[in-house]
Figure 1: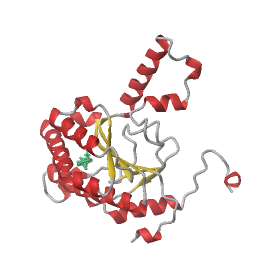
Figure 2: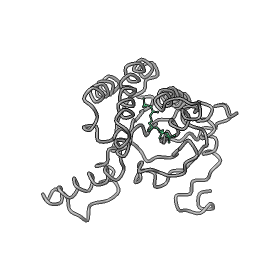
Figure 3: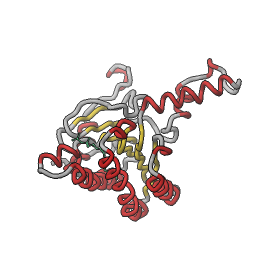
Figure 4: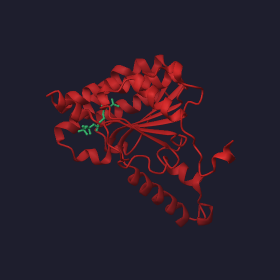
Length: 245
Ligand code: FPP
């Protein structure tokens, strides 16, 4: 088992996680999917606390995608209720650990109660500076890019921006993630190896890590193992090994 003592000082600044496998975890145990999601919130706590402990500055969790609205109504309601109860329960953990909450996605689409609770916790933790925890809620990367292109096009149309000045920094500034650095490490649980419309622009140079573990079983030690694996890799950003050394 990998413990945090096995890690060196090269801690990724921004870790993003696709939390997958709640449904399969429940099915394997003969339980309702909702129980899988409930236990998924325990894994969220493990990931958040573990990340803060080792000095990750930004942790981004894919909690609900734009496509997840197509799930059965009851499951969507359960997920929204879980979000509200987790926010109410865990605000103390966030404050105690000096963690700032942030959210990305089309928050307007969330039920009023969930949106209100979310914005309240974001407001109450806005001066915390040990780590930023971002929840991707009603998030889709293509939707984010469309919104970005629309906003930039409007600026061009209104002569506020000239097309030749559009560069990476300008695009970054219009994304939901405008206050976050690029992702260094993307983790996906449950054995699936795909990106599912998550942070397509922001993972351009991220290291990808896939594990068979189903999300509700994900523990701090599994996070540390992913970080250990990341630390064995050489990130070349298009350069050669020799250039780096
Ligand atoms: C994927 O499992 C998980 C989700 C769609 C939701 C993630 C939500 C939580 C972990 C709980 C609430 C979150 C917070 C931030 C409090 P799946 O249902 O797709 O699993 P399956 O692929 O096995 O069916």
